[in-house]
Amino acid sequence: MALSGVHKDRGELRIHESLDELGTDLADYIAELSEASVKERGVFAIALSGGSLIGLMGKLCEAPYSKTVDWAKWYIFWADERVVAKNHADSNYKLAKDGFLSKVPIVPSHVHSINDSVSAEEAANEYEFVIRQLVKTRTISVSDISDCPKFDLILLGMGPDGHVASLFPSHSVLDANNEWVTFITDSPKPPPERITFTLPVINSASNVAVVVAGEGKAEAVHMAIDDIGPDCPLVPARMVQPTKGKLAWFLDMPAASKLNSYVFSE
Ligand SMILES: O=C1O[C@H](COP(=O)(O)O)[C@@H](O)[C@H](O)[C@H]1O
Image 1 (tube, protein in one colour):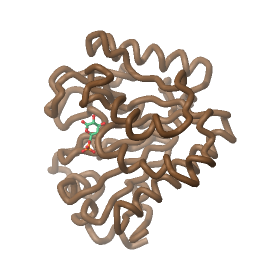
Image 2 (tube, protein in one colour):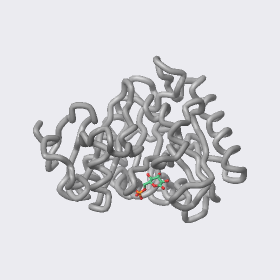
Image 3 (cartoon, rainbow, N blue to C red):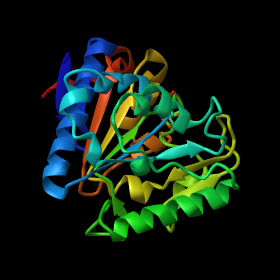
């Protein structure tokens, strides 16, 4: 790893020389959390995002992880999904299925994707209902300080505008705090109809990792991590602050290139 350290209030920073190195570190991190969770709870409840994240998780499909991870204990969810057919090029499910889920022996009934044949509102409600049933059986743990589900790991990407999941800057979706899963029909990034975990759910997870690569996201990384002062706009990624869980940033050098140098001091 090129640089690593713990920021005073923005979690662990893991900055990598290359995407290859980032991919290996990310696979190690996920495999370690899976092992710890299976040991403690017997299962691993992980929520994926779409976008570049899935490609960066690719090493998990290779040795040694393909053989050593206890895939039968994994339960898969999505932190956000586009409300399109599952075979549509924009589907986060399709992306994960083609790039990851079809390459490892995850139990098909453990893969919890949205109902793509209903409205965004209904899909969000149904998805929350599914999660509620799995919280009752403790397949998904429950937060001890809120009524929210406590996923073992939520993996997030981040857009150049600082959005995470489908929580976009200056959008009212950022204020949703009565639901676990909500919906939008006016996403500034196509497609417009999406469902998304709300901030309280993301911030109740045991572990949240934000995985970001590329110079085009350097400004958003700076806004999400550095001390930027009260007058700067609050990007959604900065609102990711697990209450009791751990936050980790997986960055490549170009994405980290606008961070203030003091963050590297540890
Ligand atoms: O629209 C979305 O974008 C973000 C970021 O995607 P990336 O390709 O820039 O990494 C993604 O995390 C989210 O799941 C997706 O729906």
